[in-house]
Amino acid sequence: MKRLLAAVAAASLLLAGPAPAAATGASPALPGDLSSTEVSFRGGGNLLLHGSVISPARAEGGRPGVVLVHGAGTGTPREKLLGEAVAFARQGMSVLVYDKRSEGYSLFDRSYGQLADDALGAVETLRRHSGVDPAKVGLWGLSEGGWVAPIAASRTEHVSFVIVVGANSLGPLRQQAWAVAAGLRKAGVRGSLVDRAEPTLYRVIADGGLFPEPYHDAVAVLARVRQPVLGIWGVHDLLTPPRETPPIFAAALERGGNRRYTFRYFAGADHAAHLTPDGGVTRLPELAPGYPELVGTWVGRATSGRAPVAQVSGPAPVQADDSADVPPTGWWESAGVHLGVWLLLVLAFGAYPVLAVVRRLRRVRAEGARVGAAGLVSAGGLTVLLGGLGYVGYVIMTGAKLAAPGPVLAGRPVVWLALQAVALATVAATALTAARWRRVAAPGERVRLGLLIAGGAVFTPWALYWGLLLP
Image 1: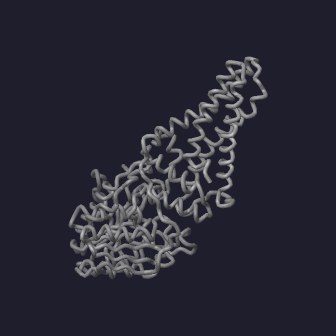
Image 2: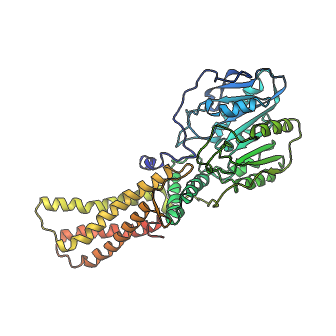
Image 3: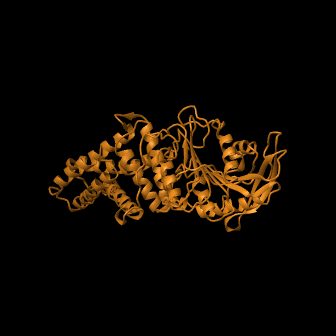
């Protein structure tokens, strides 16, 4: 079951990332006003990780430090966050950025708790670094790191502050389903593809164990965070619901008695608080103006006991549609049941042409007057089963920032409309074949058509469930 579903889930995009990369083992190229020191430390499961501490070249002692926690991606190299590291170091901090683990982390298997242990190993290393005040070391987490950094902070008093960028207070599965659905709607798609088929496929993938940490409870974690929190969101975030997330984030912190939070929205910025020229689709190398300075000023206040209280500022974020709950599947809609039904339908529809070939080889004459509708049931059913799964899988694979559904007609992708038309024709042909079945005299032909009709009878509720027979 996992192998079949893996072909569909292979690029679940917020949780997907670059190909594994080995640790560089060398200092990144830096401007002359900064210096870099190579470090190694032990993360979760005693895994050896490598990174760089970037500091001002003429740094004074007692300075604050921050550990950068990557977003999603297996083995993401430290250079991915070099722009942020340089910008923050120029604010007078020492910044530890490390190569993300690839061992124990993949598209289908990861532990946020283990990633939090990696971050804590980096924190302890930075606290011992020359010139860094051990009482002023905090965490910065991007995207997936926005789930990881609060876990790490909730486990220790050695983290003095938390900064999150593009973070989510929703569960990963709900966030991912929203991101792809938002991309589809931005492409002009409405109806059953975006409302039914896309979230359903994500639920089945999660039930099949191919979507790691699908129901991570970010709210419960945030309620245990006692450190000052700086939350940053770009107004054009297409991966995190930028209007929904911050209020839930704030409510969770306050539920735990923590009102030392500052939330800031940046105009013209995307998910990572980088500038974007086209509403979040394209990410430029430049950080949003004022972002590094905000981090530097806020860290100075937070580490001196003057963190702002419940402060929210910036332009209103752009979010056209709310996210929807993506609950776990019931037993009757589990991945195993779906796989079994899919295989049974393939067998029922595929048996008809196979048996026709056998009959022809045996020179058994079929009752041609009744073959037309039956042939449509077989061909149409197989087309929808294979094409529907492949198309919805393609949609979620291409849905990281803006889904690519192909040409859209009347709010429906042309491919989806074609699949719906074939599904409807298959149901009608099933009814026609069933009406003629009793008039078939040959026992072998009756069995062959009976199997096909049974497949069509199961196909109808299956197609309804996936939205193929809905507007």
